[in-house]
Figure 1 (cartoon, one colour):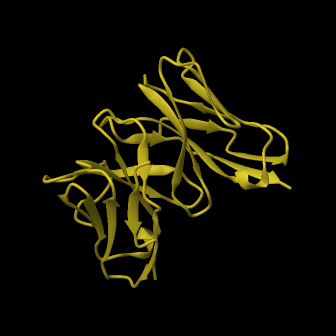
Figure 2 (cartoon, rainbow over the protein chains, first blue to last red):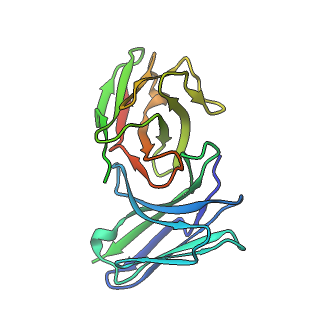
Length: 111
Length: 116
């Protein structure tokens, strides 16, 4: 079943602007991950944040986690047209190694 | 990083035929792999958990006789879509994780199945 819910579901911005995507989940987690998917392609792992972490950075990416609100955000700074893709958050699944994915945010960065 | 290879990347088949999709962990052993299905513009839904040397565990609503999973070795899991129907057209993705604590997962490139 779907646990994570991304918000917004679709986002269009101009190149150079920042893009913020949010994810909410329902149950307690060990970690939360963000993935990127270009149209019709596989998933690319972006960043993992553990339940005891509040913020993590990787290049132009910044992820926050608020376990009290069961939410996370992904910020992409200085966006580029190449950032156009769908972004998914994923939380621990019931089997420990699988993931429960949110519906995703389709980001379009216009040149 | 670890690599998971999925083959084929695209396949078109006729209704009623069977299609086999392979998922290989290239540089690590995976006792457990996962198969997901993704409809257009939708998220990934877990179909089944593939366990090396034992039967797969299917999620509710997934027909085990239609989606046959075999995990005969520590580096290969296969998903066979039997008696394919146009409704089975979808994007199928496998994944495997390093270690038993389920941290970063590595995903295959996905297989676009079109049943005509």
